[in-house]
Length: 134
Image (cartoon, rainbow, N blue to C red):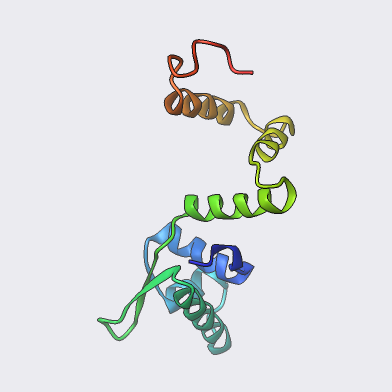
């Protein structure tokens, strides 16, 4: 999969598929555009074909209206994009990206609590040596 080469248009298609699980070209067009027209349908179809060629979506051809399903989930996409960003800006290190996001002051209390729980789940206190996080 070539996740680092996903365009904004292709990403809009993936977002529809992530939300719905699967969809036809018409359903995707309806979700992306207010009005369905032939040029918009053609544009969506081209984007879906590009995603299929990149190995990001699967096409079910069993019915007249082909259905598409994502082969990559949102988390895989984010991991790929964040690593690519870290490679370009931070010599591959993710810590500067995470630190910058945390220090931005834009993380609501609910999200901070979810992050604390995630850290505790991934690295229980025994594994961390019972030391408070730095």
